[in-house]
Image (tube, rainbow, N blue to C red; front, side, top):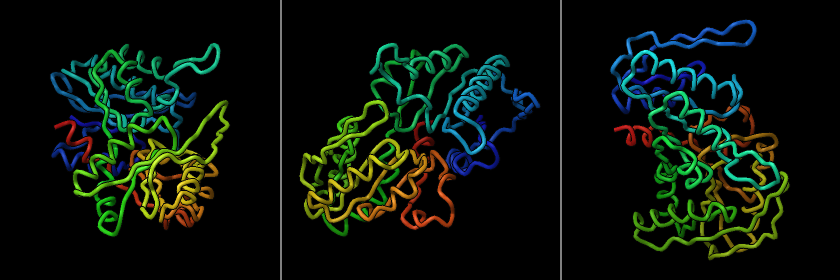
Length: 311
């Protein structure tokens, strides 16, 4: 059974339902005037393998905390009523960026979220492009399946590869492995060399610093600048400018999750960035329909990745 807890119609849920040939099962959600809510399935779930889809990004209706509670409560309810198994499908996992201590007395938010999923009886978790795969796998004691986002962009990348040389770059040292995997996959599919690069970046207390250093070869290439998410867009802009100074013919900012926190729409309109590719793991509701950034955006579906994993 497939349940979707997204508010209103979810394009991702509809695509996943169609890909799997499984209908979206009905549920009821009641919200009380004091802010509490109640969720329950409207079909018999005893003995069923249930999948529950909900991204934990903030907005446009609920905060990440509200969504996390709704998902946990619904998972627990399914278990209470005899579901054989419950799989949480989480395109965007909240608190995944806080996976280690960097300051005295820091929390480790990812581990605490993992403990909550374990406590309500989640059988497995499927996550798209986590911030740190190793941290994700080590935080959970229930099975986790991490989905790499780069296959969702392969169609667009192969089109660009047919037009001239390609390179894949990471905007910071922490994303090197993510970018390397896509680089290797593109080389295998195209049958030609694909360049690779990394841009230097450091962050402390929310302040980003970078000397604009580029390690790798990008001269004359279209560079696919790949990260797990784009929030304010500042990391992408800094890296794109550095890559253009290093000789890149053009730079396309690619991210699994488009959060587009203010002032991302303005930042990403920078001339150093030719286009912005994101998946539909987070609807781009923060970018107005008439914003010029919309003309640079391409949104690809991550439903095929989840469908393949569930099969």
